[in-house]
Image 1 (cartoon, rainbow, N blue to C red):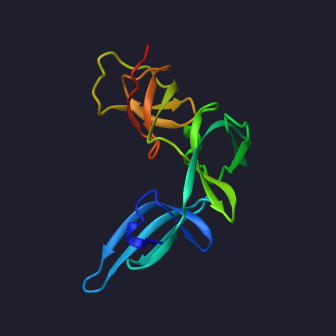
Image 2 (cartoon, one colour):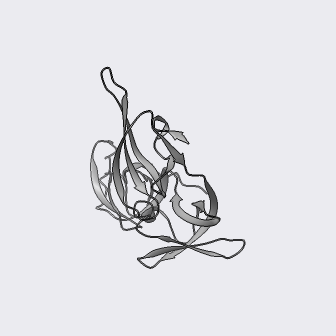
Image 3 (cartoon, rainbow, N blue to C red):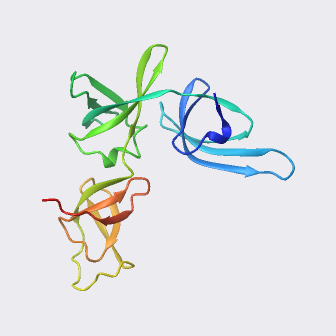
Length: 193
């Protein structure tokens, strides 16, 4: 059991027999009464999000999860398919659950999959991606020489099809670091030789 006040971002818990992950946590202290916990949670089976409000002294069942490193193969619009590189076992995860993470995963890339054991059956729940990923800029207007000021931005299309704002000095073919939580430009990726 885990206390409602411990339901910080990223914590998974069980509610009505289904696993949920906290996306946003807020603790509200009320005058003389107790505190209230408001959380925005994502259902790890269906992918929907929901706002839940509970008293701070409530306890919920903790979901014990395990991680396995799997290789991303492809998605068909309904499920994303991953493969265990040692046993070649294929695992499918609903695309509805991975709407936020899927654009940041490249084919052939290794990612951590969260598994939940329910009644002896291991079920894949979600993908754990890093907070920043490196993506290549495929289309952006040309940069202007001398524009290195960091407060001027232009739109760029990335290799995964996403659009984001980048500084004027970024050109086509360059790699940039992107925040996976917001989709925003973080920095120019350093070239490794």
